[in-house]
Length: 350
Image (cartoon, rainbow, N blue to C red):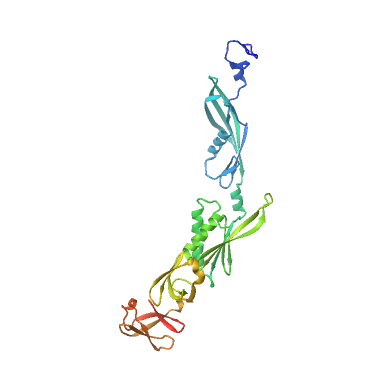
């Protein structure tokens, strides 16, 4: 049945929307749906905000947060065209903002406007990340160790600097880039790191500084009751070499004085041939310490020939003839020269 008049007002000379005229239709029509009361959760520590179930960490002013909450809660009717929405914060009462929303648009070619009074409440809470920070939460433990020796005081101090510098850099992209605890043990330091991602960055930075080998070991700490899955923390061991720069090592039957150590390799000079060698640090277990740099002695050249340098053995002051290699061509009688004694054989050290 087609009605030629409005069943509500009886008008028969107006645009019809179904069984009623346009005026009766628009009388109860709502261009938008929006709650009268809106709650917005903001972290009281970092000012991050909860939107649609997710925490957003980028800082924006509180006023902008209120405007975004209004926009997010507006639902526009599909019949509205050419709409314009004006938002206004009329006044703040503590944590409550009294807001005004005005909508102007067209429905079936008729221009209409609509207003709403909305209350936006700011709820101060603590986001999950800040909650973890307050609780001393950590995901990784960096174990700083040395292979078969004690770590020196200056190495600990340098490690502290490396950790602090890395955390400062990472804090720009990771809120859990912090160290709630340092356990100073006899065998080395344990650095507790908030996030695993940053923990791995710290371990790499320590390896960059000292060389060494990194190994990860997950440990089950508890079980998530809701999922039944295990919760793990990761222990990351960075083990720096037993040897240091200027020490004498043996590798592949070569006796080498270490000249540099970086994150991937050991650089040294064969003290027999003066040939330079690069040893991958992944082979650290095969590099054996022969003598510490403190074992290097100084003695005096007492005689020289084109092929021989004669020195005094510091242990008994006997004369010892040693091969004069090209790298010692600028030495003269009476000069001091460095030597190292290995298995009763004396080597000249440049």
